[in-house]
Image (cartoon, rainbow, N blue to C red; front, top):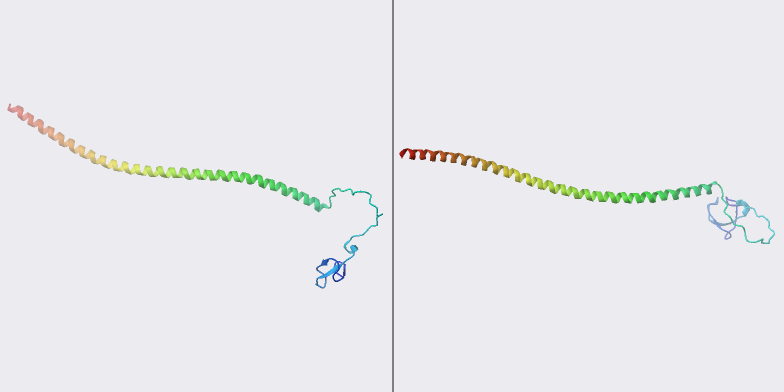
Length: 158
């Protein structure tokens, strides 16, 4: 006899695994061994059967609740996925804009550096030109003084 109660009969009935002997054999059992009991009927059909949904035990209700929770969670996932896609697109656009602005800032910094370098060179040239101007003014003043002295000497002669 098998652990579940059916009798052993080689090559008859459904295949069952897990008997005490550990061998795979065909097993034939009585419905009473599995908890089923046959009832007598009159043998005449009274019409089509009346079919309706019968909720089983609490596990069926728990399964329905779990499925509803799963469906609600999936809707939330879909909604948040859409929000995530929008946010990701916004971040990518802003990152691109940030890179563009940083590039423009770097270009302007390079330009400012060039202008500062040109300004320094111009300041050095200006200092040299001012020195030269100062020397030229001094030389001119000396020449004017010499000329004025020569004019005075000529005027004294007559």
